[in-house]
Length: 120
Image 1: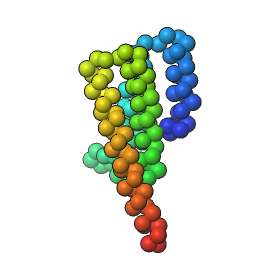
Image 2 (image 1 turned 30 degrees about the horizontal axis):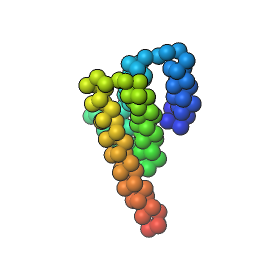
Image 3 (image 1 turned 90 degrees about the vertical axis):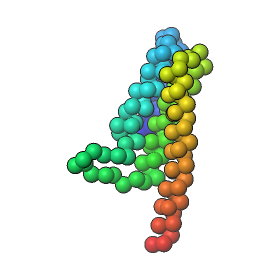
Image 4 (image 1 turned 135 degrees about the vertical axis):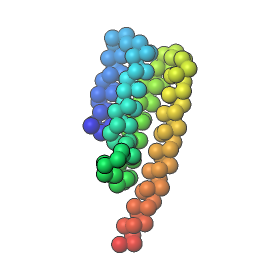
């Protein structure tokens, strides 16, 4: 499921959090879940022995970026609720770094895709 198709689910989850009184820890766990699913799915770039590699495309990196951004929404929400445990701070900071890395990668790949298209 792509991040765009999950956006209503994420926004709905945030609404339920506000209504149901879900804790900052629950929100943090949901952010970790989104990142974990993304790392095993759309963000997975490395494969084990005997598995085929997938071509990296701008679209794939864009999907990964959307997943990281979805997790960041939840990390930011947990932070706003006062979450300040060391593990949380570390994961939140790494998610911000992953977002910056994905943005850079997307820019580079889109440039290469445009160059390849114009060369053809």
